[in-house]
Length: 631
Image (cartoon, rainbow, N blue to C red; front, side, top):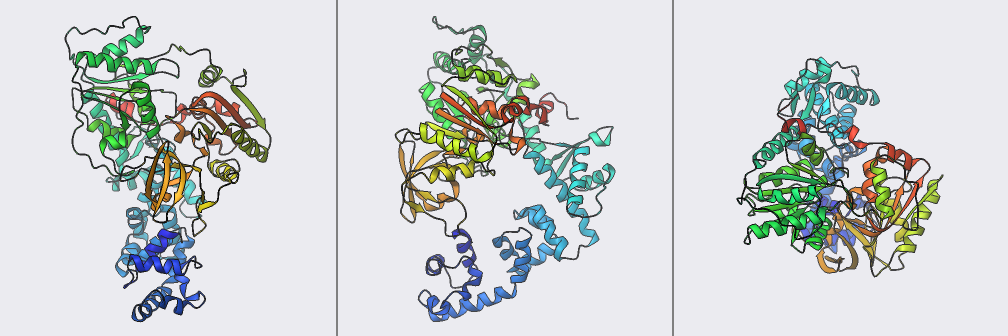
C-alpha cells in the first residue's frame, strides 16, 4: 500500500479519523500492508500509544472481521483488481451483491479494468448464461477503447470481430469464433453504449463508442456554426508596411476581417509566428477595443505564445475553467472578439468540443499548428481532419524561410520520408547495437550538455516508457548522478523518489490551477505537508499530495515535449516498442531543438521511424462528419 491507499484503508474503521489515521501510519511505518497490522511486533501495545483503549479494541475487532473477507480480497487482487476496489466491494454487502449481479457494469462505473473483472468472474463466480450479453457488450467496449488509445475513433466490424475472438482465444474462453451477425446483435442490444454506421457489407460497418461518436458529431456542428464567415469591417485591407509577407501569409492575415474559424498550418520556419503577430496587429487596427484571447493546449506552449506575441496567453484548461483532467466547470461563453489557438495539432476530441462550444458565433477564430506533428493522445486527429474536410478556410504556409539550419533541413527530410545523411556538431547521429550502450551514451550526452543554471534548456526525449532505454530507466540513471540527498521516498517503494534539485514534470492538471499537465520545475524542498518547486523561475509551495501528479523530468515523452523548444535535445530511439517508431514522432521530437540535436538510436530504428507514416493508421470520422457523410 502507498500512503494514499493506507489512508483510504483506515477510513473504513469507525473511530479512526484523518489525524488518528496518520498517527497509525507513522507508528506502523514498518508495515507495508495494513491488513496485516496485527502481525507487527508488539502491535497491540503500539496501537495503545495512538488510540484510547476502547477505540484500539474496536479497531482490532474490525480488522479481524476484515480477515474473514480476505480470501475474496486476495482473489480479486490476484486478478489485477486494486486493493482499495476489492476492499470496497467485499467490505459492503450491498456493493458485493451489485458486483455479483452485474459485475461488468459495476466495474465500468467504478473504474475497474474489464480484463481484471473478467478474470475474476471466470475464476471464482458461477458464470450464468444470462450474464453473457452484459459481458459481450462490455468486452466490445473494452476492445474499442484499446483502439482509441492508438488514435482511432471507430473500428470496422472485421477489426472488432478479430479483436474479440483474439481476446477469447488468448484467455481460453469459449466461444472464440464469433461471426459479425452475432456481434451486431449484441451491439444493437447495447445501443446506449455504441453508435453503428451501417454498410451493405456487415464487415465494413463502423462501430463507435457512443461517447466518441457524439464528440465528433458535436465538433462538426460547432465548426459549421463558427465557419459561417461574415465580413466584419467593410473594405478593411491589411497594410504590410513593407514587412516581407508572402501571398499566403497576407491572405491569412487579411482573413481576420472575416468572422468564423480558419486554420493556419506549416512546418517550423514557415512564418507562423509572423502571421500570428500580423493577425493580432491587423485586428487591433480594425477594433482598438477588441478582446483578444490567445491559448494553447499546454502550459509551455502557452508560455511560448506569450513570448512571441507580447500578449497574455493561457492554457485551454485555464481559459475554460477545467479544474482537473476530466472536469469542466465553465458554463459561460468566452468573452472575446478574436481567439487564436496555437499548437492545434495537440487538440483532442474532448478539449476541442469544449473550446468550440464555448465560443460565440461571429468570433474570429484561428487554429494554428503543424499538421505533420503528433496528434493528441487518445482518439482523433482533429487538426488533420478539419484540414482534409476542406470545409474550413485553410492557409498552407509551405515556404520555409529559415533554411540555413541543419536541424530544420533534416527535420523537413524526415517529414518527407528521407533519412538524413548530413551531420554537423549541431545535428549528430550515433547508432548502437545494444541497449546498455544506448542508455550509457544518453546519460553521457546529458551530463555533457546540462547546465544547472539553465535546467530547462537541455531535454532528453524518448518515445517509450517501459524499456531498458525508456523514460523511466533513463530518468533513474540520471538521478543517480545528482549529488543531493533524497528529500522524498515513497513508503511503499512504488513510484519515483526525489532528491533536492531534481528536475520534475507535472503529469496532471492541478484543480487549484497551481500547475498544468506538462509544467516543468525543480524540486527544492519537502516540508511534510507541503513541497516547494521552482516552476521555471516561479518558486511555489504546493500540497505534498502533488507528488502523485509528478514524475522525474530529465527524460520525457515526445507528446510531453510538444509545444516546447529547448536549446539542446537528446533524442533516444530504442527498438521497442516498434509501434512508437513513427515518422511524425521522430519529426515532432526533432523539431523541439533550437540549437543542437543529438539522435542516439538502436540499429535500424531511424530508418523504421522515417519510413513509417502514422497517418496511414488513423481511422477517424470527423472529416466525414464535417462533410455531412456518416457512412
